[in-house]
Figure 1 (cartoon, rainbow, N blue to C red):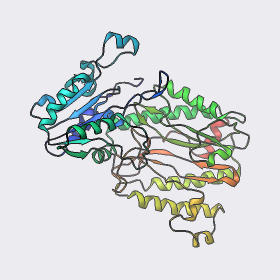
Figure 2: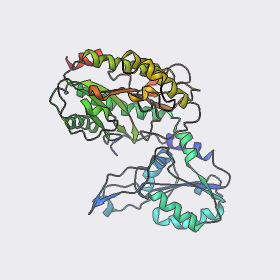
Figure 3: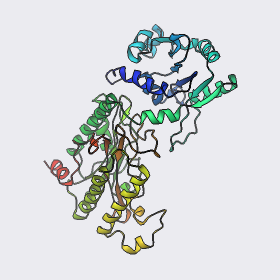
Length: 430
């Protein structure tokens, strides 16, 4: 782990939030992710399953957390199973968690080696009436690969057909969406690392630079600040490329007169940041570019005002659409006839602003949450309106990460990252 140790009180509190919502005499199981092969003896870098990390802080493969609050044996109310470490493993793979270090990290008192799981789990299931199984129910999930969690679910359903099965996902979506202060501090750290990267670019970007060189500058800055790197695949899109919403090739040269759309963010301690900015390659926006830029910024500022407790996300997106409609009229991109004849299911403004404005963010960039329920204090959302004009080779998207407050406006975790067009020009030319 590159990041500094996290106070285990976070994980203790998170487990209490989960177990308080469990049905009587049930247990819940959470598995780590696999290490995924590439070919030969190569593997992808390990990424921990966010749910077991959220509940324990364990950032290691081949780990299992079992929660059984009604267990007769108090030692089995929270149990962690870890891959047994050894001197040989330490030499070849590096240090793994010992039982003592696992307790210090997680606050879980009972730690067994993984080879004891089947025996202990059988004892626990003999007492339990039901089990919570963990499935990926994110609305945007597209899953083709069988996970360690999937294999465990198959094994449980085959081996314990008389047990009642419950879903962990609804509980996890509810509790993960409202952040503890420690989580907000970690997200703030990720945002500050992102700020360092953006400020580095303001003195680096110029006509002739390549998109991948910009990506390299960001990667350097992120890594030197204890991040593993990008929270998601970075988008560095110059000119016409900015009109491709998920452009990730990052292999084109930035020409004089281009605006470069950046959608990038550092991770820190598995927590994400998600930022979008638009930089003029030559340090100066044209009059038209600045008009479009300021329209996007206006929509963003107005949208932020609606990120308050009680707001319904579907209604929020509709209201932002109305604001964007007004800006597109001013820019001459649509007219009143377009609005009069529009399809209610795909309004006229969608030609130039075709994506949503906000999503949950946290341990995942597109974090879990309940979109049908009102916004609550402690939730964190992106705010990212954009205008994409293919015929002008221009795409502008501006995005920050905002914490919903109990009272007053949302708190911007990216408040110190330059966003006003004039400030960006000044810094790029200083």
